[in-house]
Length: 126
Image: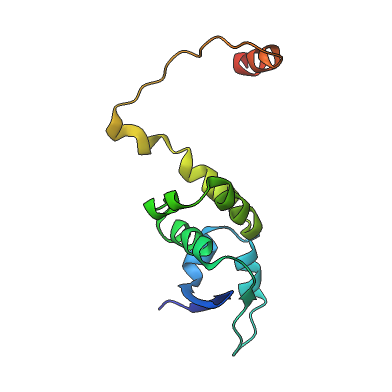
């Protein structure tokens, strides 16, 4: 049986499960709110419900859904940091298996120019 959890994000009510919330980790805002959950209350978070919907879908599915394309990626990153799940966001966006259908292969780095060339070359060698 799944334990249902409710969150009110601005004017919209969201329903999810404890299992979904714990995917983000134990030190996230949603987990912390759940752990301090008082019976017969619904935690209120004064944030954008549309962005929250995207991040909740990320927790549920492990992928960033296509509707996220309608938002600026910086806004999504900012909200992910607020909720404490930015590591999960980065992990889903850097998963090499997502690119397998495209047949992409590693390529050589292009020569760099500019003031950061030495730093980047030193990092890349290690």
